[in-house]
Length: 248
Image 1 (cartoon, rainbow, N blue to C red):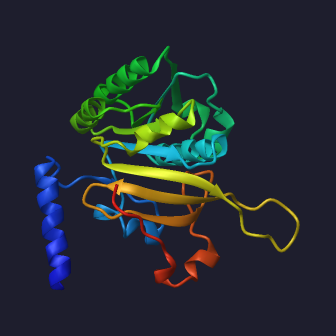
Image 2 (cartoon, helix red, strand yellow; image 1 turned 90 degrees about the vertical axis):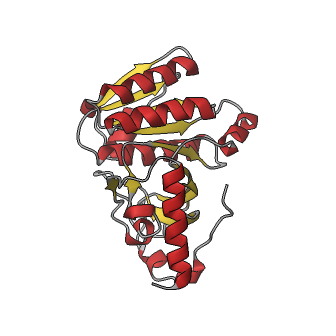
């Protein structure tokens, strides 16, 4: 192993030890090699808290972020608890990402404090595969509670960040206890050789990860089984064409 790689491995082990995550975690691979190889342990860590938000495209990117979260939940066996404050959860959209209505327990709470309380209870229950909660603000204290609840039962938590005003989006840059932080944006689909609708395409950015490096990839949106795809034209690009972000 090259010296730089050994140093990086040692640093990652040290960070995991300091954060209490030294034990090996079960992971959920995305099934896209270019994505999985950049994640610690080769997939999304299960039994912990993750954050997902849309990009700058408002409701369009917000819908993409919700489908990204749905795709993750869809590939975990069992029921999914989805907590909201606004009654605008679009069941056909979740089903298109592989999560049919029969697998979703929908909770509409009065405010974000109630949503976070429902999410924590869901994570502590132990009988759910995943808990998704739509929240605008997520403090370090609240995220630590959620992360510990997820670790205690092995249930995966996803905080789906939504904001009523653009100014509230600044909260997404604040430190939390989440294992990863993702941002999903809609981008144009590839042109088809004949008129028609192509598979939706997203720019998926990992903007923060414990023991990992930020990156972004152009991917095809979740299919009916919750799986992402790597577009053929992106797969043919040289590796150096990928972008990296500064660690947030």
